[in-house]
Image 1 (tube, rainbow, N blue to C red):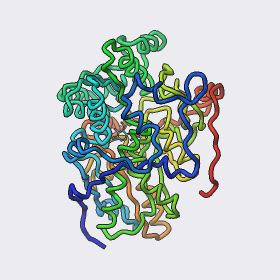
Image 2: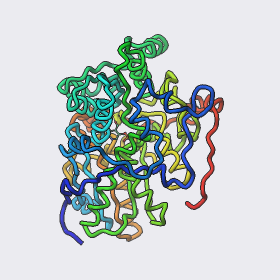
Image 3: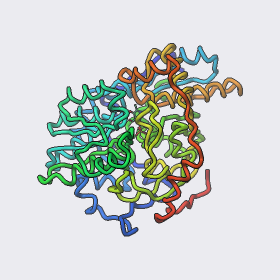
Image 4: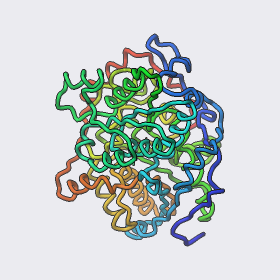
Length: 464
Ligand SMILES: Cc1ncc(COP(=O)(O)O)c(C=O)c1O
């Protein structure tokens, strides 16, 4: 086995296709539904997304070619390195071998540009002149701002209020890339005005910001604006699957067999799916892998919410999606992992969880920050607060391997760095942060109304 600390791939080894789990799920994914409860056709999404991305959204092809123009943009930072975390292993005294895929080396500092450049490219090809979007922590907003600047289209970002106030540097980065960023809810849209009238002091949520960004795109009289989403949807998940495909090649170069455990933090599910889905495919075909999405205990979508049809946004502008959901009106507590404050979960990740292919876990904020600090002191990278959830689960698994005396191979996705999230770290180090256990009544309050929506089938093959 290699004693190297990291493995780079050459550009010619970068995947040339995206992987679509929809082709391999034992129970086919269920369609999005319109307001009348019937499956929606691609034309109903046309005011929101360009048709070339809608085709990807509904595709069940296993492999989809990455256009040369997208590859050209991805070469700016891809392939990303896979590191062995020797120093963390030593600090934990674990027999486990820990690897991390370093997506923080992208220009915006996270995995988000993988889909941002693809979405900007397809919109540009379709003749779109402006993209609108939401952002939680600001990682997605800065990724799309970067991508729009590369292809030469305008970008407007609705940033969740609490992050807008907590993370001023992300706004500045978006401005540097030429994008406009406003706090959400904003007085600029009807969705924003309605929320402000009801809850003037709201910290905002991704669900609200999504409503605003969709409204801004579909009401643009020029017809040349579209909306872009940084997670959740099938085409976004698809674009992230280069991560796991690269990991497979890199593990082979390290001399590793099939990993025992794959871990990623999960907000809308995109970085988790990006690293995990190529391995979920192996699991479907017989490999024994524990695949763990990790979410905040204060926004426990996969671990405590029902699997239901629900809207992806607060103003109910999106179709009904079959997903685990805390209810589209749920406003998560203002924890520092802003990108994990989302009420729903990608329908593909949800379908894999229903099937029993995933082993979701939730962890409290303080344990995540503690874990991130240990990681920074050993491996040197201060990870994004979102990523700290993956680090915490990795440390839990490495400790378990120590107790069991097992030489496990654990791989996690380092989805982003935290160099613009220092306010959260400062508060943690000064003892100003607390954990928040979401009461059951709070979950019931927001999920009860979901019973009025059509219920998706929970049929599964029963193999896992
Ligand atoms: C660094 C980082 N990791 C993870 C996430 C969560 O998103 P997703 O679940 O789509 O990967 C975000 C979202 O903003 C993020 O910025």
